[in-house]
Image (tube, rainbow, N blue to C red):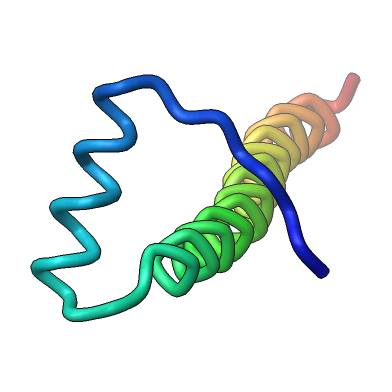
Length: 75
């Protein structure tokens, strides 16, 4: 597949610089950047989900402790 991308001057210079530094074609740098972005996006989703699960577990543990305390008080 061929794709056309419009870059402003700053991004074009950045792409040129990266291409020269990495000794890669511009298209390879762009492909690598897309792969990196997609990988990190997925990783961030998983990290956020993991954090939400941890928070939920902590809240459940706290609530469970409160319920146990109430039951132990004879109420």
